[in-house]
Structures are given as C-alpha cells and as structure tokens.
Length: 315
Image (tube, rainbow, N blue to C red; front, side, top):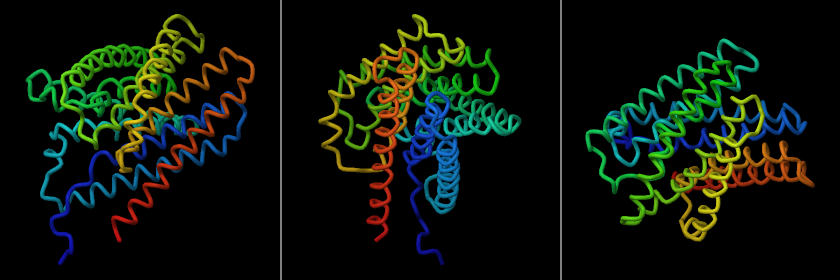
C-alpha cells in the first residue's frame, strides 16, 4: 500500500522554476547573439530548462494521481489557478529555442503552447466576466494568463516566423497588461495586504513592459523607436517600484514562491542588455555582461536555496 495515499497536489507555483530558468537561458541567448559569448552556454541552459520542465510535469502527474483534489479544482483555485499558464509560457520559449536547430519542431511547440495559453486565458477571462473572482483574490500572478502569455507569444512567434501572429499577440498582451495593472493596483490600494506567500508575485509586474519592449523591437526589425522607448520607460518605472518593495521582500522567509522573482529579473536584464547594445554608452559591454552574471548568480542562489529547502522538507 502507498505510504502517501492522500498526497496533496504539487503547488502550481513550482511551474515558475522552469520558466525562471527559461528566462535565464534567454539572457544567455541574447549574450551569445549580441556580445559574442559561446553558444555552448546557451545550449547548456536550454537543456537545463527542458529537463526542469519535464521533471515538473512528471512530478505534477505523479502526485496528482494520489491527490484528493482534482486538477480541475486546482485550476479553479483563485490563488493557484492563474499560475497554470506558466506551463505553456515555458513551452513557447523552448519552442523558439528548438526552432534554431529544428524549424518544424520549434513551430509546433511554439504554436501549440500559444493555443493552450490562449484557451486558458479566455477561461480566466470568463471567470472575471461572470464575477467569480473576488477583488481580494487577485494577486500579481494574474499578469501571467493573458498579458505575459500573449507577450511571450509575440516574442516567440516572431522568432519562428509568424510576424502577423506576433503583432496580434503583442496588442493583446499590452491591452491585458494595462487592464490587469489597474485591477491589481486597485486591489492593493483597497486592501487587505497580500498574504505573505503571495507577496513575491508583485515582482511579476516588472516583466510585461520589459517583454513588450523586446517583442516590439523584434517585430520592428531591431530598430528602436518611440514605442520601444515608451515600453522601456514603463519597465524602468516598474523596476523602481520593485526597489521600494525590497525591504518587504527581504523580510520574507525563503520559499518556492521566490521563483516568482526569477523570470521578471531575467526579462529586465534582457532589456537592459539590449538597450546597452543599441545605445552603446561608455562601458556598455561590461554593463551587459554584468547583467548576465548578476542574473545568473541571483537565479543560481534561488536554485541552491530551493534544493536545500527540499532536502529539509524531506528529512
């Protein structure tokens, strides 16, 4: 007989692990493309992403078979449900990486994941329209199902050669980002304060404008313009908000929820590297490589602490 007959489902927050690693892999891809670092590093990081994604899927399926809670119930949970969209986001990014060596596989992965993300985002919107989601239940994770998914879709669809789809995804992502920001700021202003485990999701607000700026730059064939400058300026504002939130973040005990910091950090680093390459201020190469190393160290520390946390939990 199983020693764990009524295991709980794996929290959907764990899906932030492969996505955060995908963000880091993308930083190394930008480094290889724009600053001459070895493509070997890029390939190593994307391999780690694929392994992390596979382990997450297998573990979710293994634990899910023995759980009292069904997958449908977990997806309908107002706190965890929106985070399920982290899964197709990672697949989209993997697809754009695979496309460089296998175009057919890359297109299939990217477009299939985009369809899944779109269907899930529409499902979330239906719950909003019906009034099923209370304002107090909203948190930073609600950026993910529509805004972040569409913006990552824009970035990856452009890579795999679907420019029109990328443009449409960008419009949806920016519109959803604006609406979600209004809702989240209203929720934070009216209170109550976010529960401690959900505080790291506030970091996600820095990701959409950074991804939007990178997606627009790709769609406009790498030419910076007022749209790129505007998105970049908004990203800077979101980063400034994160700086003011640092004392609150640092007071939190470490948890798997800290992976919520990783993808936004990688997105902002990618934008910073791109800006440095385009504007080339004094010391721009050192600035860009500094962002690569700081992001790698930051995500590496979170990974190491996660391993230690898992060992303590299983002891």
